Amino acid sequence: MAIKFGRPIELRDAPRRQAETLAAPSLDLTIRLRRNRKTEWARRLVRENVLTTNDLIWPMFVVDGHNTRTPVASMPGVERLTVDQIVRDAERAAKLNIPCIALFPFTEPALRDAEGSEALNPDNLVCQSVRAIKKEFPDIGVLCDVALDPFTSHGHDGLLEDGKILNDETVAVLVKQALTQAEAGCDVIAPSDMMDGRIGAIRDALDDNGFGDVQIMSYAAKYASAFYGPFRDAIGSAKTLTGDKRTYQMDSANSDEALREVELDIAEGADMVMVKPGMPYLDIVRRVKDTFAMPTFVYQVSGEYAMIAGAAANGWIDGERAMMESLVGFKRAGADGILTYFAPQAAEKIRAES
Ligand SMILES: NCc1[nH]cc(CCC(=O)O)c1CC(=O)O
Ligand SMILES: [Mg+2]
Image: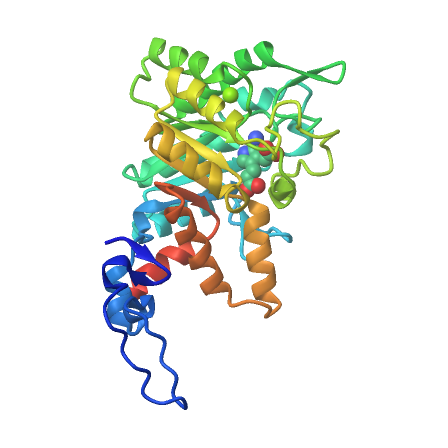
C-alpha cells in the first residue's frame, strides 16, 4: 500500500473521522508504530535481531608466572592471567558455552627484540596456553592473533628498517609465527598485522604443512585507531611503540578501501573476515556483509570496552544495558560474531534471561 504523510493513498479520499473533542485532540493516523511497542511480549515478538552466546569470542591476556591475575588499569574488570589461570577462564568460557577464545600475550621486555623472535618460540606464552587449554577443553575454539607487536622492542606489527615497516619480509616471519601456533594446536589463525599478501602466504604454508583444516579469520579491514590504547597497556607495548601504525592500518576516513581489503583477503583464502574497531565502524560491517555475504566478525576493541566499563564504574551510564545495546548493534549491522571483552558478562546475562 502506497503511503503519503501517514495516510495510505487509497484512503486519502475516504471521509476522515472527526476529532472527538478539542480538549482531547486525536491525530487521524491509520498507522501507529507504537502499537507494536506497547508491551514486552509484543516487543519480543517483533524483535529483528538477537544476541546469543554463539556470537561471542572472548579475548584474553596471558602473562608469565603462576597462579596470578593482574588487573589491567585501563580496562576495569579485565586481567592478565598466567597460563594456569587462562585455563580456568577457558573452563568458564566452556561452561558458558562461549564458542571461541582469543589469546594475546604480555611478553617480558627482556624477551622483546627488533625482529620479534619470541613470536617463533614454540614454547612462548601463546603456545603454552593453547596446549594447556586444548588438553583440558578440546572442544572450545582457540584463536591466535598473528602480528609481531607483542614481541617487538619497537612495538610495531612488522619488521622495521630505517623507520619503514617492511611488507614482504614481515610476511615471511608471520608465516612462521602462524605455523608455530598451528603446531601448538590453534584452531583459528587471525592475522592482525595488515601487511599485503599475508593471507595467501599463510594459507599456502598451512596447507603445505598438514594444517589444511586450520581456519583463517582475517583482520581484513583494520583501521589505525585511538581505541587500541588500553590493549597496548595490557600487552605492554604502549610505552615502547615508536610512531604510529598509519602506514599499514587503514585511514578511518575510508570505506571503499575496506571493501578492496576484504575482497583481497577472501581471494587469498580467508574463511572469515573481520572489521576492527567496532562501534565507530558499523557502516563498514554492513557494507562488508552485504557485499560479500561472508562470515563477518567485528572486534569491539579495548578502548570501546574502556569507555563503557569506565563510565559505568563512575555511575555515569548503566553498564549492563550499554553493553547489551552495543552488542546487539553489531548484530543489527550484520555481524555474525563479536570479539568482545564483555563476552563472559554478556553470556551470563543471556543465560540468566533465558
Ligand atoms: N596487531 C595487534 C593487535 N591485535 C589486536 C589489537 C587491538 C585490540 C584491542 O584494542 O582490543 C592490536 C593492537 C594494534 O594493532 O595496535
Ligand atoms: Mg590487506
